[in-house]
Image (cartoon, rainbow, N blue to C red):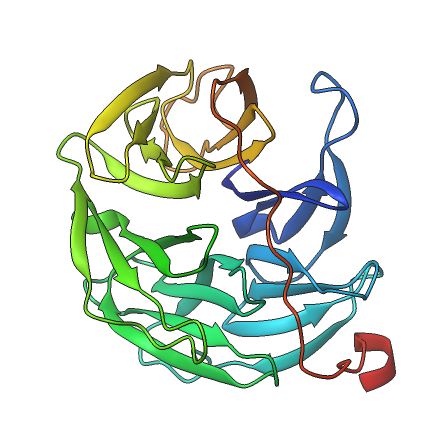
Length: 283
């Protein structure tokens, strides 16, 4: 993959994206089998989450906003908040929280300082900008109770921890969780012990940080740019990227799987307040 990211363990299996190519992919039963393409969009595809009680439907951070995505590739746009930005923008990583909201970040194509934002899609489909001044947002990742959100600003080498109001989704005052000096924190996932697994771009490593921010372990990969992580039970899956490498190695852009001691839980679904029209119905 050019830029493999947004990997999630869902009730529909493992899904991931090749962002710049706009591809939504799924992993077959065996890790050695080729990935299968579900959908390809004509715009970048940052991440998806399943839509509850709507088999085959996804909510997606794509292009300059958020849309509902059907299995045939048709879309229903909820909002395109970055469409009129001064600099060309695209959506990046995103996920649903345990309460069924969807969160996704945006960034400038040239990663211009402070141009990115974090958006939240509420149960009624409303899209709100909740943070700005971010350069390259990655994550977010949530604790199982939904009370804490981790968000990386990859370009600044920092992960912040935000309290979240369960009723409203409003974010409280953040604190610095981890600062990475030798690479860029990218995709993240929280395991059942509350520790955070982080793909560290540019270092060929995935790192597990305890809830107090202490580094617990480091996994080394034969690929330089780890970009996304998810836990399928006790299997840790890692996506990587070839983009930007003058001489990519044979494993750059591959997906890796390793068994770990502490499991994770399935990715959460987006839960609309009322059934939203499918892309086909909306068209």
